[in-house]
Each structure stands twice: as structure tokens, then as C-alpha cells.
Length: 429
Image 1 (tube, rainbow, N blue to C red):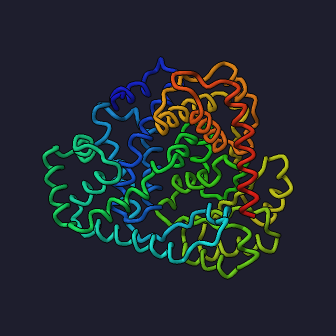
Image 2 (cartoon, one colour):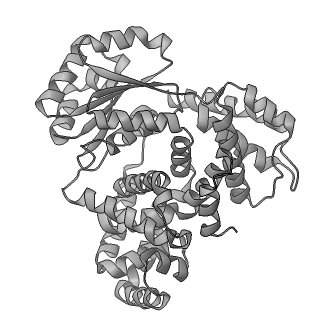
Image 3 (tube, rainbow, N blue to C red):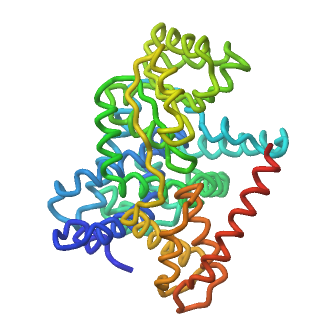
């Protein structure tokens, strides 16, 4: 396994191509995502907040990597970035964010209320157990139990000797006693590496430098924003990046679905009231009419809220909606690009997803054949990054060891992924 110093040098190597630099940073994200999350969670005590902070820290580290004087000091330097982000978040009380995915993709079955209650109580007990510890012990316990980081890695991250790590962990175990198993389970269930979503989002943004620059500029502008993009192009993530780069980055962020405005306008009004001075992302703004958009504008003015509207689709076909929205609200328009036609980004993500799939299935796959690469470059990817990841994951699962992925194996997955997606969509309607 390559050392973190080696990966930092690879990223900063001016003779290296962009693909190599992005692959090295993607490995850093995957290796230390749980570390950043656990440390942030030990300070802010909220899963969504901790994930946001960890992503923000990776974006900042990517931008500022040239400022790191000694590659061997990366972990301590990175912890200070995470700590600063945590401090900014805790300067004022913040409300729990509402995941947009819950509004867009409702569950296909009715949730078991007893199961939900049990999960909620388990998470609350794990949090109480962790926050019963002093901060020093809390950080070590969170870092150790979230993903089993070594004493050496924890010590380098916290910038303390390994002996101090061992001492604090021993003291934490004594204090936790019977609640240790609860803490382990609670942290394991929430860590970012439980799936590829966290790392994929960071990689998607950092491989789209032009998009990242546009989002940063939009964040600094203070204007209302309209984000247009196909499914799977990271519109909500783009909205969060805008929020992080704005003067309101310390203020609350929330996401609601435009359909809610038609079904329960009072609920939407309460969201605005509770997020005064913050940022609200409104998905499917095209499902609202002029009267409802005027209501959104008025609520934003009353409660000093910045709006980020989201639309599924491509810019040419959305021009009518854009014009209608601009009649009632001045917005800056940003388009999140689809994956097709983006050969540089596609190559980076292909290799990143292949490495992740090989680790997940404990397999050694020798890259892609030319035919497989050509097929993926020709494919339209209706679900963009999410679909590419699923295709490669399935192909690796069925592939032979020490062989490259073949064109035929990729072709089989294109049909399989599409069929499964259609079946899932049908069940959720």
C-alpha cells in the first residue's frame, strides 16, 4: 500500500498527468474519509453535519495541497482543516439538515415504526456514550472504533504520541464499560465507508475543476442560483458546495422538494422560518407554478434565505422553465455536466471505481481491455456517475482474477443495470 507521503508527492508532481493526480487524491479520500468523519462527529455530534464537514475538509485540502510544506505531516495538517471547519459550525447552534434524497426517492415500503424507533434509540445511546467522555478521550475512541485506525495513524492525525493514544483509549474503555459495543455499532453504521457515496461525490467534484470554479464563484456572489442537470450529475452536492463557499456557510442548509409546496405549503413556510439567514435548496422547481414561485421568493425575502433551485434535465429543454422562474426571481444559472463525452473525467472515475470494486470483492483485476474502454466511452450513461459505478461493481463481481474487464462483460452489465433500475423505479412508484 502506497504511503500518504507517496500519494501527496504524486499529486504535487508537475510532470504527472491529471489522471494520476486525481487517482492519488481519490485514494487519500477513501483511506481517510472515516478518520475525518469520526473526528468531526466527536465534536459536532451530528452525522449529517460531520459528513458535510468531512467533505468540506477534503475540498479544502485539494485546493490548498501546495501549502503543505512536508508531505509526511499531511494527517496533522488535514486534522487542523477539519477542526477549523468544526469550529466554524459550532460557533452557532445549527439545525439538522434534511436529506434531499428522502424527498426525491421515498421508500418503496412503509417503514416499520418499531424498527425506526430502535434504530433512533440505538443512535442516541451511542452518541450519549461517546459524549460522556472528555474531548481528548472522545476523539481517540471515535477514531479507533469507527474503522479501526492504528495507534500510529491516530497519533499522526491528532499530533500526539502513540503512547498517549493507548492511554486515552484505555481510559475511554474503562469509562464506557458496558456501552462499548453500542458505541462500536453506532459508529460503524454511520461511517462514510459503509458505501461509496461519500468518496464518489468528492471525486466527482474534484475531477470537474471548471464546475468547481463555477460553484465557488456562485457561492461568493450571494445571488440566488438555479442548477440544471441530468439525474446523477450531483446537483444537490453542487448546492452544498455553493453553500460552503458563501458568506452563509455557517448558517443552516436545508433541502425540500418543490412538490411539497403544492401539497403542504405551511410545512415549507416552517422550513424557511427555521432556517432564517441560511440556504434552502428546492428540487423540482419546474413542478411549481408562478404563484408558488412568488411565494418562495416572498418567504426568502421575509426570512433572509438564499434559494438554490434544482431542475432535472438539460439546459436547452429547460429554457421555458428558466424564463418563467426569472420572471419572479433573479437567478444565476449553472449546469452540472453529464458524464458522456467527458473522456478525462470518465477515465479517472473508471480507474477509481475499479480500484474500489477490487477492494470490495478482494479481487485483482488487470484494468480494462481497449474494447471495454471504447464501449464505456460510447455509452450515454442516463444515470451518469451512479450508473458507471454500478456497472463496474457488477462487472468486477463476475470477472476472473488477474484478467482485464472485457467488452462483453461490460456490455452484459449495461443491460443488467438498466433492467434492475427499471424494476426498482417501478416498485417505488
